[in-house]
Length: 242
Image (cartoon, rainbow, N blue to C red; front, side, top):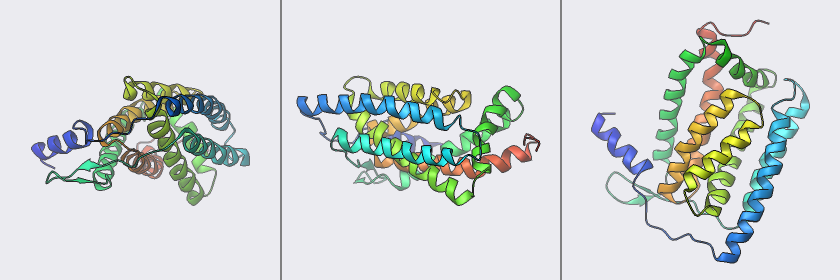
């Protein structure tokens, strides 16, 4: 992708908003905020417990499945959601599928480049391996399915229900809350990844006016990193012993 093409792509994906009017009534907004607040508390507790379960424990799979249900349930109870639209190369509006896939792959490239640095620093490498230990201790198709479902559920809630509940600086607020919830895991690298991803998909939500783009970008990134990080860290000589 040439520099001009990349600039136009990023402008359409992350800067230039599409026209829409998705505002809630005052009553609906109040209901949305109450539901979102309760969902955030419950989700943070389940996430914190789940990621601190020893790798290989069946409870991990149970809790991650429950967490997806919490995010989805909270989003449904909070109120209506919109898929959103994006600008195409010829100035039309369409569902943000290909654009979001490309954005997710760009994020994968950036994170893989960062992994080269992470692999050389034990303080950063160990938290990453702590997360990957869960993936290594269960059948890969099961972990891929869990990653896919939870990524979709997170976006439906955080960039769907929660984003619509925030009337000022929603990208900043939803990113901060997403990062704080992730902090319940106690994993430094997950928190860092949540902050970066939150800004990216938050900007996407701002531009497209819906959850489809963030959903595609998130699962493209999360599933790709799940599949690429273990062999990448192994190739860099950072695989754990045993």
